[in-house]
Image 1 (cartoon, rainbow, N blue to C red):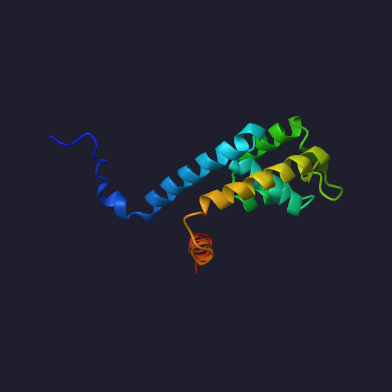
Image 2: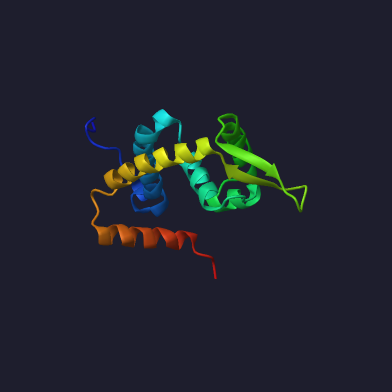
Amino acid sequence: MPSSRKSPALGCLANHVGFHLRLAQLAVFAQFESRLGEIDVSPAIFSVLEVLHQNDGITQSKLAAAVRLDHSSVVPMLDKLARRGLVERRASTTDRRHKHLHLTDAGRELLAEAIRRAELHEKEVCKPLTAAEKKLLLELLGRFRAPKA
C-alpha cells in the first residue's frame, strides 16, 4: 500500500519542459495575485497597461500581438479597462477600421502602483536565483519565443 505522504509519480512529465513551465507559471501567477490582486491587476492586465504606456496610440491588433492574446480576449479586457476609466479608444484619423488606444491619467496612476508592486513581486520570485541565473533564465525562456528558421 503506497504511503499517503509520498508525492504521486509523474512519469514522463518529470522530464517535460512544458509541464515544469506550467507549474512555474502557476506559482509565479499566484504570487503575483497576492501582490496585485487587491488593485484588480492580473498579469494580463499588467502587460496590457505597460504595453499601452510604452506604445501610446497602438491599435488593438498590435496590442494583442505584443502581449500574445487573441482578439476575443483583448476586446473584453479593453472594455473592462475602459469602464474602469483606465483606457481610452480613439478613432483613427486615417483608417476608420482602427481605434488607437491610450492610457488615461487614472490608467497611468494605476500602472505606477502596479509597477511598484510588480517590482516587489519580481524580487520575491527571483530570490532563489543569482543575477547571472536570472539573466540566463530569461535568455533560455526567450529561445521559446525566437522565430523559427
